[in-house]
Structures are given as C-alpha cells and as structure tokens.
Image 1 (cartoon, rainbow, N blue to C red):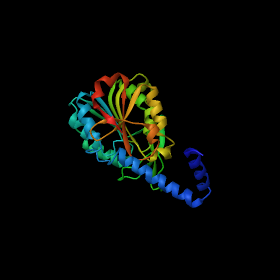
Image 2 (spheres, rainbow, N blue to C red):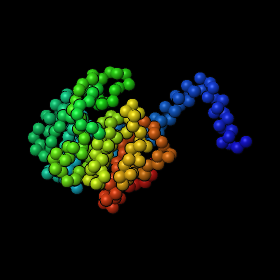
Image 3 (cartoon, rainbow, N blue to C red):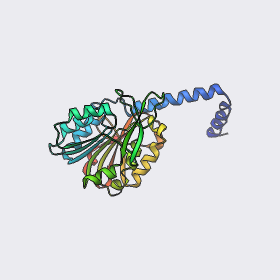
Image 4 (cartoon, rainbow, N blue to C red):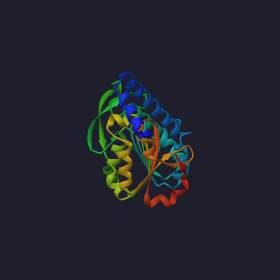
Length: 271
C-alpha cells in the first residue's frame, strides 16, 4: 500500500469518530488563522502595506475611490500622498460613520461624499449596523448583533457613468464580505481596463456572503487583472493552489494588464 492509499484509509476510519471530526474542524480553524497571520500579520495600515502602496501609487493618481470608508481614515491617509487636485469618491452607508466622514472632509472640494453602499445591483438593501465597530456590513453578523437598516446601494459602473469619469486610477474596497460584489458591479469598467489598481479586503465575512477568493481571482484574471498579496513593503505573488480559501483577514491588490509595466517594480517576491 502506498502512502496516499494508507492515509486515505486512516482518514476514512477517523471520519467515523465524532471526536476526531470535531478535532479536525478545530485544527482546520487554527490552521486557517496560522495561514492568515503568515500572509497578513496585522490590520494596522502602517504595517500591513496599505500606507506603503499609497506612497508608491497615490502621487500618480488623478482619481480614486474609497468603498467602505468607515470614518475616512484610509482616504485621509491617501490624500497625504496624492496631489491636491486628485478627485475622489467616498462611499459609506453607515449613518454615524458617514457623519464623521462629512465632518472630516467638509472643506475638500475635490471629494464627493456618498452615503451609500456599493454592490452588483442598484436600489436598496439591508445593512447590519454595529457602529462604532468597523465590521458593519450588508452581510448579517455571526451573532446577529447588528441593527438592520435599509440603505441605498449602487454599482461603480453606474456611479462612474453618472460622473463621466474616463478612468479610475485607484480603487480601495473594504466592505466586510461584499468586496467581490463591488467588483462584479464594476464589470464594465474592468472589462475595458478602466481601473488601474484595486485594493480589496478578504476575510471571514466572505464565507457568510457566499463569496470565495477562488471565484474572485478567476473573475479578475479573466478580465486581465493580475492579483497579488499586499505585503508590508511589496506585492507578493499569491499561490491559491497552496493556500486555498482560508477566510481570514488579508489585503489583495489587482493591477490591470495595461499597467503592469508601470508597476512591476512593486512586485517583491512570493507569499
């Protein structure tokens, strides 16, 4: 009997034990956390690569979009690296968080502040608000602790068409599980490679929204976007066949094929 057949035999026997199955589930969850900490040690934007990529890209941007702005910290940081005439769209559906966004950027004529969520459809949706925590989402929470509110939703395809923008230099998405929905709602822009660089967050809410990293990577690859793991000070080649879907916090960056020559120096190695 070869090794593979031997292991398969052992696995079949262990599968008949409820204790073994419970231990396997707990071990899998711990393994997923280990994978996540290997790929993204902290959500601190000063250490997780977010500030780094802003410093590398923002100064060349004429337009940017922040989807899921929360209280505007990411936008505030991005603007410290961007030119004064860089135009921005800032989306945040949570009323309390949006009030802080309005107060923070009330004197910025180059920004459009929009109290709305983004997805792959237009209309209204239920939003689960757990402000002041940062995990408010269109995805129902694990413990059902969010206050259900009706909010407006739109697509980036529609929002960009309404404003007659020709191009989006940088798109950041942090939607607690709905990031892939936002990308699907940008399919016209992506098909035409009208978004240069995309940063999106991956995590446990993806499972609850029915989204997977594999489906997202295939979607972006099919539209000629190359996807990288965002490291502390560089973009890293990501091997999905090795890591799979682990549903833990990580940031990824997708670059349009027509921008790869410009940004290839940002690629620093393999995850």
